[in-house]
Amino acid sequence: MTERAELGELLAAAREALGHAYCPYSHYRVGAAVRVASGAVHAACNVENASLGLSLCAERAAIAMAVAAGMRAGELTAVAVVAEKGVPAPCGACRQVIAEFAAAGCTVAVQSGDGGVRMWTAAELLPDAFRALP
Image (cartoon, rainbow, N blue to C red; front, side):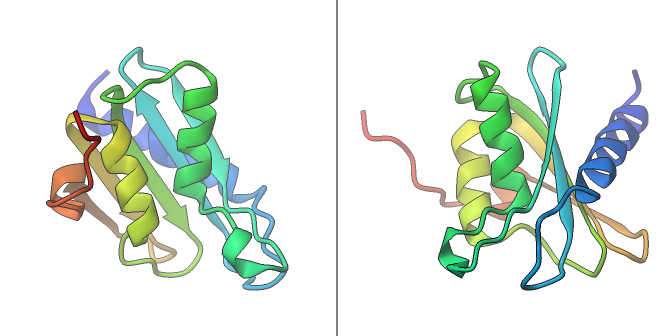
């Protein structure tokens, strides 16, 4: 599969997950999909909570699903995020979680409601990420 086709597949999975978002407070639906080294794709949506600090971003939810399926640190190869409204980039918490699991060269693509796609590597999004101590 070409890089463009892989990106299209991830964006489509994220778009489908967006439809399941639980966002009764912000009404801001987001879907995310991640690809792991094995080629498996895991998708999820944002899940809000009345105690807003307990809300879960779509990116972290998708990564948690991948971990539950067996992904380990260094096996995240791509992340795609789709939002109904413009979203400039993943939040800081999501950037750190992406960095924790990212393989070298892991790409992050964000598509907003207007259809535009912005792309980075995980290292570009968070160049000085926290790392585990030896």
